Image (cartoon, rainbow, N blue to C red; front, top):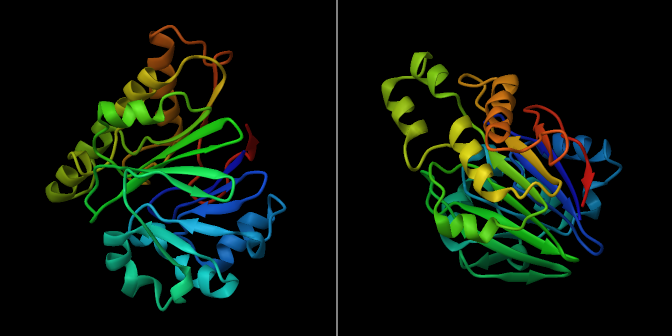
Length: 262
């Protein structure tokens, strides 16, 4: 499998994944034009995409979904409640391209096994994704305020983790957000802090060369260098060698990450 974060944060989210027989996106919270440009940087044409998976209905995840579907005749795959919630946002979609799944139920598409994992966010029914193909496994988990042991179990054994490291608690507390927004962000249906992300990775990682991308960083309540340091310091503290045991990268807000092959 190949993986690239095209953009990550409240300004727009989209992830590209490629297997031997499939090319697809998880979310498209960017304009169709912007997605096409970012894909071209890794020598992929948007016309080569096979489908789009959707995590939830918030605009920073679905802004370009309808445009891409209509332009390239792409199936959009989401759970029923998300479809109902995003229907007006993404515009008219050809009936054959409306694909509905049940959360926490495995899906097999082409050469990809997909598990849409129900998560904790202030949307109607947000999911993360565990993707498997050709004996490789990756997990995508953002926009959740809590990670259960069941979620940990589903992600265990992944070769790559794309995981939310949204905010620094001190920056959030002392920042410009209203008290309502601060409570929302740090709540169970909000977003993971850098430290919470660190602890989850501490449970998931085996030190066998996993690739880790820290994603969905807040522009107001975090810094890439702070997210990286918090996670790396925590993992070092539990005995991991950041340079030998794993590869750690912060996903860019306005551009693509490294394009990696598992």
